[in-house]
Length: 110
Length: 118
Image 1: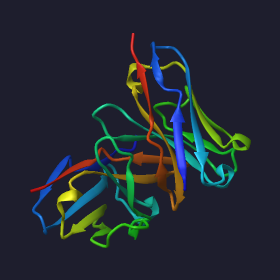
Image 2: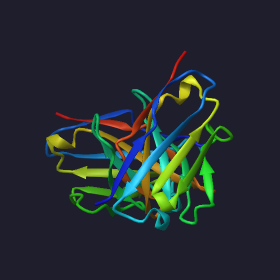
Image 3: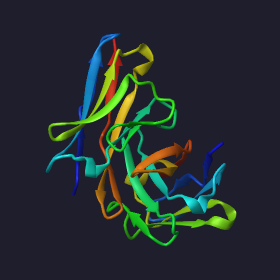
Image 4: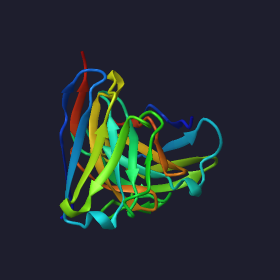
């Protein structure tokens, strides 16, 4: 069974930079997993931030960027703002029409 | 604009069945793949099922395979999730989600709550 890992929580200071990661318990994440990232605030449907590793969705500020760092996918927020405080979730395509979400990272901006 | 509106959720007992619907507007349902994604209370998102643009290719997560079936009626712009043999661990908000291409998800519905409890 494929398990996608994310940090349960992270904190960043306003104006700071934070990198959240998305890994696999077995193996490395690559561009072939087409990692995508979603922002979710309580009571709201998720918002797409990044798809296909590093492509920003329409309307997403350029302070959000995606990449592969080592053996994980990464979401970097540069110049964090108060309203970036949310849950961030990644999802990987693992083949054969199957997607697997990570458990999500709760980001605190303080 | 693109809208996805789920319905059909409710409270059922373990072992019972339920059919969720998702009404799509603002785009042509038969031109896109569609997913069901769920979120249990206090938990993260879980991908459940996908129906390909061709309407015949389907995939389901192992946790629901053999119990849930995704389908669509393009003439009515409606997506369905037939759920049988429901378990307590199926309790979640179920979202239908338009496939965004590049194996991503773009537009999300607000979801419908399914509670499985005796």
